[in-house]
Image 1 (tube, rainbow, N blue to C red):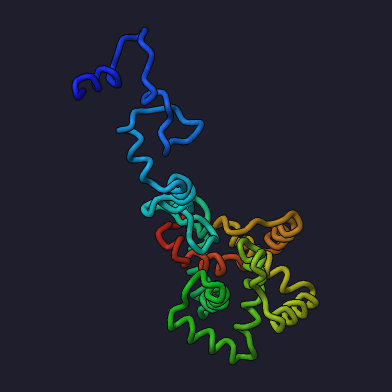
Image 2 (cartoon, rainbow, N blue to C red):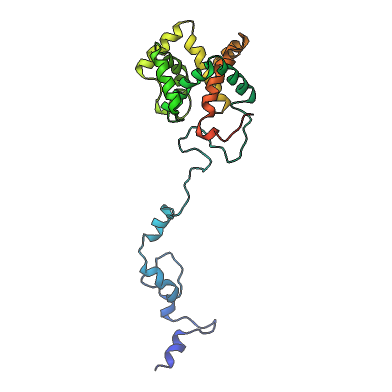
Length: 247
């Protein structure tokens, strides 16, 4: 009896019918699956039914994040690669005029400090102890540092992702900004120059009206350009631009 069983259930010729043990589906196999050898189906039978669904829905623990690595986690602008050189931003000509303006009793430096303060309020830069000291001194002088900061804050608030988050001027800052715009649009023109500096680094984009007014300001003895230079200096000190030299 023990020798006749392999002949009944083993491999036979193609013309011989299969035994019921080969044609009947296994109790753990699904109705629409192909019949396989019991040795190949046994490991699948012991696995839970929803194990394959869980593995398809969730990535493996060591999977890489979907966010590209070259983008800054703060979301404002792509971080440059190491050793990259920029063709826009704080140019060599702007560096010359900035240093020349600093010789005039540090005028350019003192104009840069409020712009750096505006960037620090958005978490984009960090002020040094000297810059914090001079900003405090400027605020003591009839709030000069505070009022000079508002146009840059307004320009940054019009960039992504701060437009969606609503971060920008406070109620008091909005009041003083609008009040400054009543003085022949002084704060608006200052904002245009600040936004131009941001656009040179790819952080913002001027609309047609702002582009037209910036051109007019540059024609007026280069006022728009010289107002942009200290803001561009402050933006160049952001972490993602410190490794990029002047164009």
